[in-house]
Structure formats: C-alpha cells, structure tokens
Image 1 (cartoon, rainbow, N blue to C red):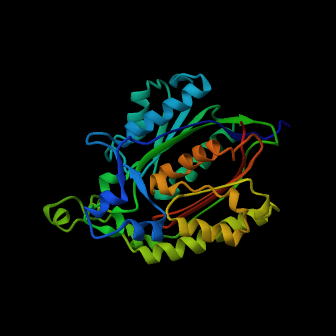
Image 2 (image 1 turned 45 degrees about the vertical axis):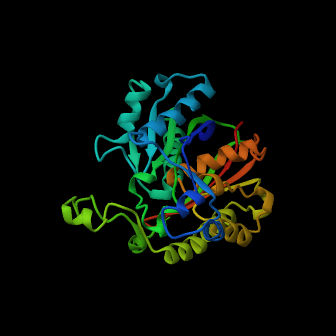
Image 3 (image 1 turned 135 degrees about the vertical axis):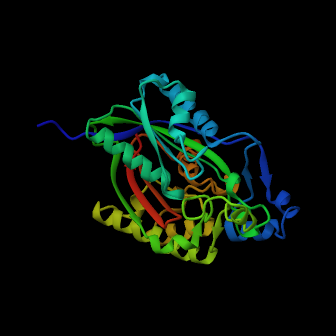
Length: 332
C-alpha cells in the first residue's frame, strides 16, 4: 500500500499596494491619535489601494510571484482557491477573474469566505486535494481590499484594516520532515453579530435606506471580538499541540493572524512560546484579513525564522466567528 501523500508549501508570494496610510494621516481624518492606535492595536501604518484596484489585482500580483519563484507558468496549476471577504463582485467569483488574468487555462477554482480565517481554511482545503492525489499543484491565495468596505468616519474600524495579498503553492511530498501535519478548525455563528457587514446580501439588499444607514461597511463590537479572540485562539492552538504531543517551546515560528498585537502576545504567553519565535508585522500592514498570514510568512523568511524543517504553527480568529490553527514543517 502506497504511503499517504502530504501537502507542502513550495513557494510564497506577497503583495501590498504602495500607498501608505499612517496613523498621522488618520489623526487628520477622525478623532484618534498615533499613541492610542499603537497602544490598543500595535499598528503604525497600513497600505491601501488606489481607486480602481480590486482584490483580483492584488491576488494576481502575489500569484505571479509564486509562479516565478517555482519557474512555472499559470497553466501548470491544477486548481486555485481565492480566500477573500472582499470579492471583486458577487459573481463571477474572484477565482474566475484571477484565472483569466493569469491565463491559467484548464484550471478550476473557487472563492472561500471565512473572513480573517479564510487563508488557513483555504490552505487546508487545498491540502486535502493534494493529499487525496486529486491534484499535484494547488494555488492558494489570500487577498482583501478592506478599504473598500471600511467607513473612514468610524474610528473603531478605520484604524485597523489595510489592503494586501499573499499566495502559496501546495504540492505533494512523502517526506516526514516537511509538509502540513495537522489542523483544527471551528466556527461559532453566535458571534456573527459582533463583526459583520449587514448590507448587500439577500437579507438586506442595497437600497437608499441601507446606504444611508452605512450598512455596507464593517461593523464591529471591538470588546467582544477581542475577548473571544484572546480565549479561542489560544484554546485551539493548545488542543492542536496536545494531540500532536508538541510543546509550545518546540515551535520554531508562530505565525498568527495579525488582528491586534495584544491578542498575539496574550496567545503566545499562554502557549509558552519563545518570544523570538512570534511573528508580528501588524505595525507595517494593519489587518489585511485573508492576507495577514502569508504576509507574516514573508516577514518570517526575511527575519531568518523560516528554514527547511522549521516547525510552524499558524492561527487565526475571524468574523463568523471562525477559528483555525495549523501545524506544519516548512519545506524550503
């Protein structure tokens, strides 16, 4: 009987638009301060798209870097998954738009919506295609243009989010020393009212009333989200470590969703992680939703914290609520 396949990440590409919105810029837009933003979130600046740039454009930039890194063309891909909560439009899917822009003829794919957990959810979905032998090369993209759904008169949300994208290529390996080891995912719809965009769907289609009530922007109960994220991210990571007989001190790189620096450090402390293994780049990018984890992977590589065989834990909490954690060994 043949040995089961395991998916591994063989390439990474990221992209953020060049335009920067600093805390000082926000001080001129809403009643806030650099000191308050840094203390509460850890964010100093974030990148925003120019008018007319869509999620698919960010996704294509990141995906093109992945293909270049592997020396492949778009037609070498078997499937692509776009993790996003800001699709170019309801339909066609952003995956269809990306496929066309890349010129990936013969590829199939789809969008996956899980807010800030979308990248880890898409990563596992792609990994299952590889593990079953259905596909040899799956392109997983996390991309969001959060500025398109942020109310820049709402200081509770406009200081948090930025735009960005990251992509990875998944391929099979039979090596025990690298690849995706295990994961845990969970959703809790009771928290949906704490972080959501109420307008635009079938429940509240766009009308003059929904626009006047600013229902097409992100609405957040910051305290509720913070409390849930601090508790649940650590809970899921602990369960994942325990069932794989791994200690927090064994982790070489902890790459969490970059929602809030205090959430990250609280989780790391509870898990007993070594401080130098915790990847934080929220100060430079803010919360790019599905883009944060691949962007943080890039930061880890630049800081020399990701090498072949490194034991890595990914973790996220997002609207829904959605929660995800992944264990893997870096493959290159």
